[in-house]
Image (tube, rainbow, N blue to C red):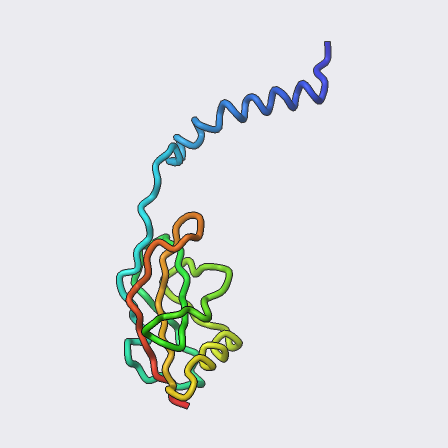
Length: 142
């Protein structure tokens, strides 16, 4: 008797269902949760730095290797109300260089005070906020 496509698919589904826990355990996914990412410091621009409007700086921070992070920007430090961020994609490393368009939007937050506040948020596996770094402020030199 020749196996049918349906019986082959049923067999494969059973094999996959039985193998999934063993495979997950073999690759370290057997229920162990990695520690949450942490942002330990904002490096540059430094808090209170004067940044030239034409410079498009790189926002650098010290963080847990391999974590996922989002850089957020606000027109005020207290209260910090994130108006812009590094986008839908999270930044996988320890720095974010805004595109020209993003930098223009960040500059628009400066208003008449010429200041922009920024912070970095560590994200969990489901993109939920785990922790945020202290807030840093820069002054825009126009």
